[in-house]
Length: 324
Image 1: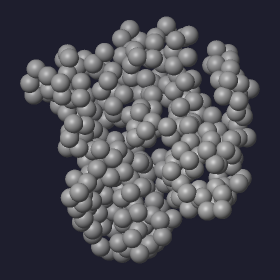
Image 2: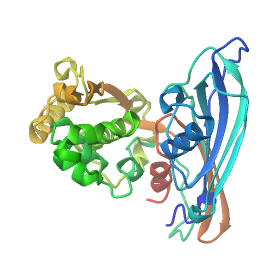
Image 3: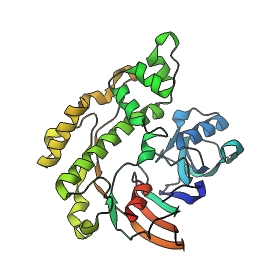
Image 4: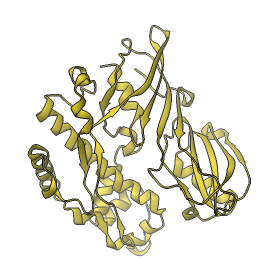
């Protein structure tokens, strides 16, 4: 099966409710982009509006190799639209001014995302599912699938190795200064990737012990009728995470073993050398509901699949689970 053969094969529409107020200091925009990640798009917008990036906020990051629609807020942003094309990258960016409000957007403030995806060269007809395992998928870990490795290097303050892996040049071997030249959200992206890696490891071990499922079994099959699984949450390890507070003994033992194997503690998620950067602990549903699912057969090997997922969940995981 081939996903994202063309960017137009993967459409993402962010679902978010804005509260408009013309007396607000924040300007709201709808961003449509292709072949650009969210940070790249924000950098282009910041340059066009002559704004510092720190004044531009969004509710969620979106895929690069796709056509995506999402919302931005800009502190005292102009009542202007932007339309840019980048022929050499087969990319474009459109920004539409919507109005003003009193609240800035923050990561996680969206309701979820609607997806329309073309699956090509499929080996079978996709199955209808109601939920899947809430893994972070490959795109979370970057083009070279090593963002989580960089994240761990940053946490362990191995800044030279992190710079080498990112490809940063450090003048006078000042690796901290070289890293601080990167946008804070990019540095956080590496730390979040490592948290995601740990989450996936935890989920994999937990479902093997609890449900006798292997990591490749995205399709829950017989578990579809068990509503109890909707209540299971898996910790995302970070600053402030307290393993002793976990009541599920199996889950607790998995997390303790993993932290021992990784040689990490929750305190490692505060990196004081990088201006006190930190990543808090949190939790995430082990399973995610796949809502409003529609499957249309274009031909025997091509299918158009549309559905809604809660915020932070990966459409590629949902689609993979339909083809098990």
